[in-house]
Length: 398
Image: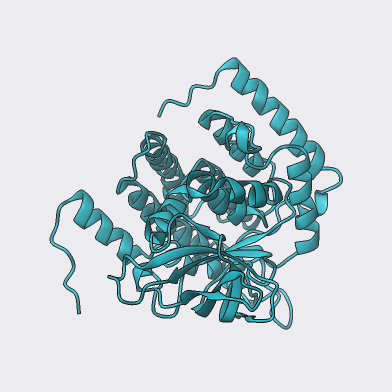
C-alpha cells in the first residue's frame, strides 16, 4: 500500500484535526485520553455523549457506502481520521463494536430491512452493541459454540428465536442495547455448520449479565446467560445454519483502517514512557535505552504490517497476513506494558493509593496480559500461519 496523501486528503486531515482538537480541548476535554487499557469503565456517560457528538458531526461510519448513511470515504482518508483521532488522544469508543463489526456485517450480509433498522442507531451513536462469540468451551475454537437457538411460535402466531446458553468475555455487555450472537441452530450438523448469526436485544428479563472482575479491579468483560431469551424471527443475518460465514466476515472487518490508529495509540503510550524516563533521570541506562529503541522500531514494523494487511483486505482477500499482524502487535503491546512498569523502578510495584488505585502504567501492564489471548490467541495465530501460509501439517487433535 502506498499512502501518499493527495491535496484533498490533506485538506480532509486539516478538517478532522481541527474538529477533534476543538472538541477535545473544549466541551469534551474531560474524556480526552480516557477509556484506554484498564480504564474502559471510566466516564461512560460522558463518553456516550462523545459518541453522539461524533455521530452528529458525521464521524461515525466514514468508510460506509453513502447509500447506507456513511460518507464513502477512501481508505486513505479513513486512515487519516484514525491517525488524527489517536494524535488528539480521542477517548475509547463505546460504539466501536457497532461501527467496526456489526455495521459492516449488516451492510455485507444483512437484509434491506435490517440495514434500515440497525444502521441508523450506530451512525447516530445512540445504540451500543456487544459481541456474543466466546463461550467457556468455545474461545479460540469458535466452531465449538454450544449456545442454542430454535424457532418457536408465540400464542399470537408470531415466530421468534428462543436462545439459551452462555457467552463469556463479552465486552460492554452491561451497557449494550443489542448483541450479535453466534448460536447453534442444528445440533446434528458438523460444528462449522449448523450455526446462525442472530441479533438479540439485551434489555429483556431472560438475559443475565455478570461482570467479570479483572486483575485491574475493573469489569469491562462480562458473562452473559441466555435463558429462553427472545428475538424476532427476522433478526438473523444471512441464512439459517450459515452463520459461520457471516461470523468470519465480522472478524475480517476487525482488521480495518483503525489498526493504523491503534499503532499511534501505542505510540502515545511509548511517549508517556519516555516522559517518565526523562523525569526520573534513567535515560542514560544502556539496557533501558536498548529496550526503548526496540519499542520504537517495533512500532514502525507494526505500521508496515498493518499496511500489508490492509492492502490484502482492500483487494477482498483474507490472508494469514492478518494473523501475522495480530501476533506481532499483541506481543509488542504486552512488552510495552512491561516496559511502562520497568521504567518506574521499585515504585512500579506500589499502588498510588488505597484500596487499589493504579497508575496508567500499572493499568497498561495488567491489561496487556490479555492482548495475546483475546481476538485470537497467539497459539491460534501461529497455527493459522503455520498451516495456511507455510503449509505445515495440522496440529494433532486430542
